[in-house]
Image 1 (cartoon, rainbow over the protein chains, first blue to last red):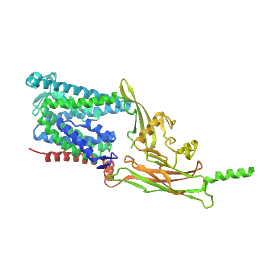
Image 2: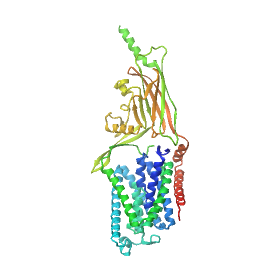
Image 3: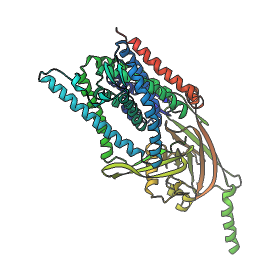
Image 4: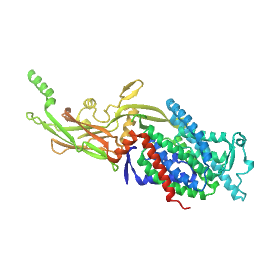
Length: 308
Length: 255
């Protein structure tokens, strides 16, 4: 069944888009990431212009993270205080990121910056998570108890001043790294046009040692707030949010996110981290291939940006 | 003898002025984009009316119709390998070029008129003007320019540019019919249809027609709201997202 999208200006197959929403929603609910880094390329692949894709994906992510966050909220598996502090850093980071984005665009090196930073970030974060996940599983197989959380695992981060206790996360850390993590996420997200959840999740797990299940719920609240605001901002400034496309994606996304969140909570956290690592690494490799392999067509045609 | 030759020349020169009248029309002046829109085919039809006092021509008539969509500026980029990775290294800006362009004809262009005439009348994709921004200047380039060729090829792949030398057929010696293929991707706006009548290698008459592609009903409402009430539209979309999310978590609630 084909339906014509009023803003994207092209017809799409409703069931295909619904299935895409479902699949990305599942991953999003399972790992607490927005899934923009998966959905945006998918939409571009079916012919939606990049600008409309980025703007519309934000509303899809808002919907699936709302659905996921509510289910974590019922299980008390999220830390609102931590989310708000990360958000404060995130806002400043986004402003800085948008500034650099504009600067790079005027220099004309935006494409390559985005491409290379995708590969470097996804590749390094993914490798780190996979290595750690495999190590944890090997340890488990040898019969040794899982041991990531004990007092000895404190790092220099825990020695910083301005300490705050986050009850839900059962951590007592300085506000500085929390705000810094929020800043990094906002900064990178603004440059690369993604929510940054896939960065936030490993940073909270490895740097702040927040329990995995709380990390996912917290990351969802944060994603929900940023993506709902992004939807409004995109609609108000660029007029490129396609509500029809958004609705189809959302319906698939929220259902997927429900099942994803349920499977995620059933799974052991080492395995969950390993799976997320594999996913992040796979996407990183795909971007690397795009950069290294000779493209089918060396030429591309796009309407000049900013001209409707 | 000399006078007769002069007279013949004058007659030939005067002939294109009012020998034939060309009338063309479209099956529909308005293409409506609804939620089930998936491209459309418009029919162009027309007739050639010889003036009462002229003798019928010996040679056959030929029709060339050029359909031009709303103009926009587009950028064509070329990738090359730099330090092992493929990046856009060069780009050309095509200024105010048609977003849609279809050239329909009754026969291959070179059978209709000579190269010089085709170029002057901008008949066919090879002769259409595609001005590029070159430094401060705006000018078209040679036909085999790689950016121009890539631009045409990519547009043709998306069915936005097309060239068909058998799309127009004569039903009777004076009555012709052609079909214009509009892909779903075509932009909204006004489309010009320029119909030219050729005989004996020269253009002897031409006429213009237009049609419009517009969104109607629900599509128009959504597109209009997004453009005119961006903030409200954004808030509504965000609220829709939150509602959908909340609704799913209630429906799927197990505990």
